[in-house]
Length: 304
Image (cartoon, rainbow, N blue to C red):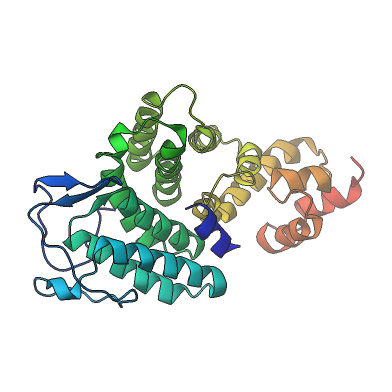
């Protein structure tokens, strides 16, 4: 399942090398939308597979793969990960590809494809440090040509997908009312404002709905949205589930206990985000709540 997500959806950024690289050199654009800095060399290495090593000095052309070889390298690592889900191998190879892009100052659609692919696989493997690095670089790439000049809906989809991830990541790491979430929300709204009217914005709309549900403490709405999260966004929300289930439980308890009311297991299962998984809900109540209160009440009124 993780591999399929990686293949089919084709903090400050930490540099992938130890040397400073200028990003203000004049650029030239190829026919396929890739950009090179005219102040940087082109690699000549023909190895498709190359391990990642931190640079401690200026790289030599024979140590760096050119664009056409990097495209083959991305295809190879994608195919292998789909087959065996070997994350350490995929992570190492993708970091090496990113490094070769960086030292040649290659940007554009292929660079975005590399960072997007690495970000998705990092999400599936819960490697949020690597995801954050990729996300930071993608913010820069998506703000530059050719992305700033794209016109059709298909080309916008990766921008929309990762704008939604930025908001969900800020919520997961810092909370829905944090400064980070507020900044991410502004960026998402700004992105949505300049999209063509006919563009499919479901990932952004979904992330905005999740933000609203959390701000309003509508936990059952959040759980419903969580189960329908587009693309790989659910991986960013997984860590919130224990905390939000506890809050939902306490919210229900405060509403029911003073009036000695009952709630059925069916309703409670949905309210805590288990959605039909009654045994998991029952086990959760026994293990994670304050004992007999809700488990006893649901047993006495199971049919409602």
